[in-house]
Image 1 (cartoon, rainbow, N blue to C red):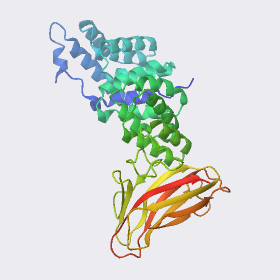
Image 2: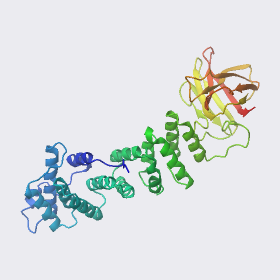
Image 3: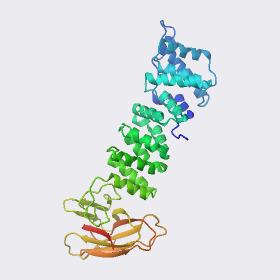
Image 4: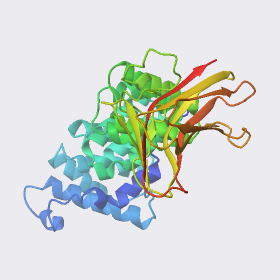
Amino acid sequence: MRIVLIWCAAAILAVIAGASAFGAVTKHKRPDLALRAWPPNGFAFAELADVALKKEVRALGGQLPGRLDRKYREWARQALSAEPTSIVAMRTLGLFGQGEGRDEQARNLMRLAVRSSRRDTIVNLWLINDYSQAGDIDATLEVYDQTLRTLSYERRGFLLTTMARALADPIFVEPYYHLLRRSPPWGEAFWRQAAQTAPAMENAARLRIRLARGGTGPNAETDAMLLSGLIGQRKYDAARTLHAALRTKPTASSDNILVNGDFSQAADLPPFDWKLNTQGELGAGINTRSGVLEISAVDGARGVVAEQLVHLAPDQYHLQARLAGSAQEKDVPAHIEISCATSPSNAREPFDIGLSYVEVSRSVDLRQEVCDYYWVRIVVAAEEREGAVEFALDRLLLTRG
């Protein structure tokens, strides 16, 4: 089994060589002076051995030295003898042993160190690498969890990136589920990373659905990021399944294929509900009290004010649109556009259906189309208008037949 959660040895050594990024381990400004004290100061011996090892790693360009001066190893041993709980001494002796090919000794010392404290980043990274190499996913993820819980937000990135990339393999969906259902404090940051990791998005969606069934998961903003990421990768089936699992608002009992076509609810997880343009020269917002979509534009503006992604099988459809209120003008500078989302380069020209203040009804024949997902867009074209444009859409209905 290929384990992709391995935090490679080179990366661990990079952390060792640049350990200042995780805070210097220095109990004294001059630990060498403490070696002359009596009784022996174990922490001072540990610090000197630690500094010596890091110096050698830096000098070798990030590699563990094959052999070290005996006095360095003796310092680490004296440190552990004087302070049996010194994590610095344990891991330093472990790394000395690893450099000399004594991997089992290194493993025993690192596992002993983590029993004393789970807050040492170098020990945790070493164990992540070791458990991953052994193919122990559960143990690997346990150490990931404890490491992420102890690192600051700014320092979690390298581990979260590795975890998100690993999710490209479906074997990780189940163990990630058991880990994330505990709602760890780093969970939101993981989901944000997963939503930006293209190879992992489909499995991230499967994982999110599993968590949703158990009533846990990230916030709506992170869910929207994952949906957007899937759609950006044209993973429409996965996105549609995810939306159906996450949707919290009941769908109106009608034949309308469009979600929230009566504008009775605030948009929920677009673009399978309405994605609204709310800034710039164009704007749209749902007035749930009145049950209308309010649209505005400055003179000369053109663009999409609202859109929704829908799944449509080859068939005959019927579109109805009704504008709200009364107006002096017969027409408004807007139209409904239906265009292919999955294969836009090979699809026919979009269907354009103009709007007026009388009810608009139009047949849409998709029986010969090869597309299965379509954008339904409300487009304003006010290039030839003087003054602002304001109107409201009362209903948009798309049905079969």
